[in-house]
Structures are given as C-alpha cells and as structure tokens.
Image (cartoon, rainbow, N blue to C red):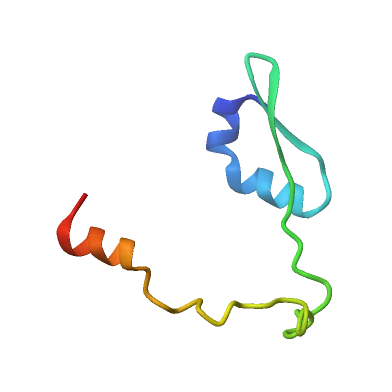
Length: 75
C-alpha cells in the first residue's frame, strides 16, 4: 500500500490488520512500516514479584548538599 493511499484508507487498513491480514505501507515502492494489532497482556500483572530482590539505600531520601547549593545559589 502506497503511503498516500494509506492516509486516505487508514481505518480500512486498521480493520484489515485486526483481522490478521499483513498490511505494509510503502513510499516510492520501498516498504516503510508494517501495521500490526496491539494485543493486550495475556496474564495479569502480579505486583510484588521482585520483593526481596531490590534494595534501596537507607540514605536514599537524604538531601545532597551540593545539589541543594546549586538550587539555592546557582552554578
């Protein structure tokens, strides 16, 4: 499908891609992009899967005096 034709027929091309057809958009005969459907995640996200594997330093929230000085006084 040529790029200029694809601009006028986008909804038709999206429908075709959703039905499983391969849709390739080209410019001057050179393939540019392939239109494919986005599939939702098949398994639900499981919060807490990395529990115990990530450590945050105790001083993570402590202010950095050099950065505070830059904000207050400038470079």
